[in-house]
Length: 373
Image (cartoon, rainbow, N blue to C red; front, top):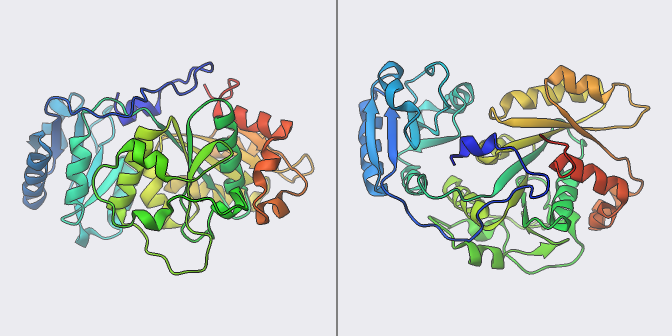
């Protein structure tokens, strides 16, 4: 099953995520890769990278020529010289471009619905690794992103409660802190200093990470593993895109559910949102927050998404109306629980997650009670 297929898979509410979690990856026969580009440089780079990955490359200079093999290819690469897709074809897996293309690459990726962007030659090693795994059995893990449409929407709190509820439901779960400027998600998860690796420890990572070693290296709290930015003021060395890709691949092969607290920075959206299979967007029940959520939504990849609204019956805008205006299903209303803000500061947010309204809300968002169909 391809990543695109996995995005539209219907969960079974008795066995919500049910992936193959044997923790192994066995390369299959040569992956069929299609490149659609008339750019000689991208063609040559793709040939070299695909050969290193052990794949088989077919090249088309434009979408008309590429239509015949588009849907049968394991991976579709599209060059930055391509501006539109053939009708009724799946989105490309990777958009290839040069550093000189600048930020326009990300805008083009959003327009085409590309799952990832590879800037060559810098991303050559990552792309080779990505292609070598493209024909492997489905790694199984579902990646769900959580992002706030505005500050104070409750994305981090929601992400922690979802991870806690999933773990309590028997799903092997990992929570990823996607915001290097957020102060460290670990400070909200627990007040204890739990041993395990943080993001900077993966800054030099390249290639595949052994799933068992990856799981064993992470801190656990509330029944789930988590990967946080350090909750300190010390200077940190951030992993580059290749290291982030390696971590995300390892997470998929190690856990059934991976929840990503993306944060609202452009860095988080570029590096992590495009790895997600589903997205949960949060908004406060106010007009300004709803407008901001709409802008964030425009920056997200074209994947299944739903809305969570933070507010009470006294809020100025109805939750259903906000969801309708954004064109998203309403997954739930974040419960207003007294003391949550203070609990977050004290690393006691998991205590609130055990309360019945919070647990009921989290299970609904996860779809364990039929909330997501």
